[in-house]
Image (cartoon, rainbow, N blue to C red; front, side):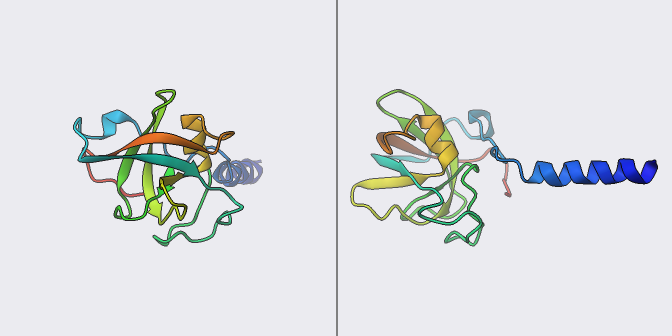
Length: 141
């Protein structure tokens, strides 16, 4: 009986690791009030058609479309950014783990979850403000 219960707990833990929701959600309270810089431009999102699920990003991390991650051309890996959709006011916070976007005029590629937060899954792009955030305490993914 104990062995069966332990096996059930182990199976549930393994299944939880396969969940499709984001692994970490970032909130404004995790960062200093004043952004370290800002940029305006077009955001887009990338998905399994552009980079395979589980493939390595430029930072060496594995791509997971439900994580709060993004690609930027020059910000250091691990940088946190708040992205605000200028047409609807919706915003999200993501961590830079990859390089891109590689389309002229675009400043950031978001994961699927980030794009959903901004309301751009259908449109594919939006004009945004990107703010570089400073964590209150050191963060390790």
